Image (cartoon, rainbow, N blue to C red; front, side):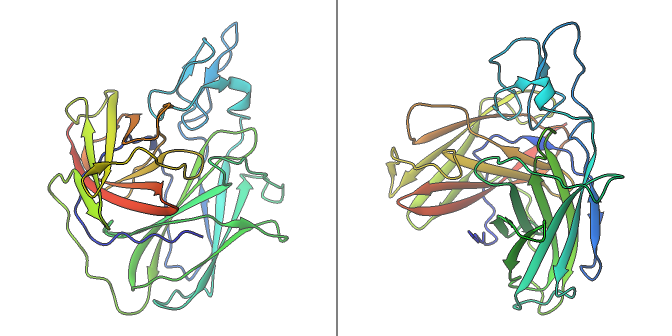
Length: 315
């Protein structure tokens, strides 16, 4: 499992963000939590006298033409029947031990369920090489972890994890039931023990550097809600352009964008491109004004690197 910690660097973002609505539930992590998720923006559009196509992650994005891509995330639109089966889903969450303690290993257990039919098995589709992408962040967004729970013989998904510090954390589960649209689970948990010192981010920070790598985030328009934005990230090492990026989870780069209040979660996939850097291109839009933290992951030289940025999106 990759466990990538981002220390509290206020860095700015070089990525495209895809907004995913987050039906949220809070927990002290001492109880089992079931988080309703449902389809991201309701069911996909119905057929209108012909074939329609929709985005697997954003079913509200539809087209009557094959071969088009989602302007929010860049994913290819697929035949509408593959996007939504009309069902709603929820994610049951249970940590073991139930009381989370800093520095002590815990097993995070997730069980996807069909609402009102909780006993029915819910097979998950493989998206970017994994069935569940678990994102763990500190509530202040100063630390970021990307995990992948694995399917077990018990019919659920488990992953070991250790919270380094006490305090509040937010856990997002990014998943897609077979035959349905993209889903997002969310829980807030409290970890006992010596607490992390909260960091307050405020100013845009569009540059990130660590271990000789530098990344620069740029947009083609002013950062405002309700408009399609082209986003690009340029990666260098020791001042030289990186032109031999390797895929990570099936793509040149992955970006997760989270609003300051952690209520809005945005997942960004890169556009198709023939080269391997130094520039990775994305598309995105933002649905609400806020300060956002942007987390980039890329693979180079056999190592996964994680960069972080800060942006302010206006209304």
